[in-house]
Image (cartoon, rainbow, N blue to C red; front, side, top):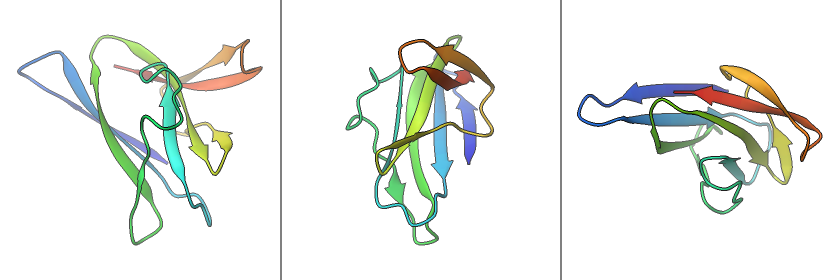
Length: 98
């Protein structure tokens, strides 16, 4: 798993690239506070090497909670900036700090 951040100089936006390489996965999406936890809003594209990858433009100066949705199972990012407990989910969420 990896998160790449590219801050834009021209506006308060960060291009965030999410990538994850789950074994034998068919569908992967990233869900979080930036997309209303919508399972269909941010699907990741599968590359030939089996990695799923996608880029999202997010407002800088904000922290976002997120998880990967891998074939229906929620997975945290091992390289997240931090983690936050969610009473709603009854589990920790990955946190992305911009």
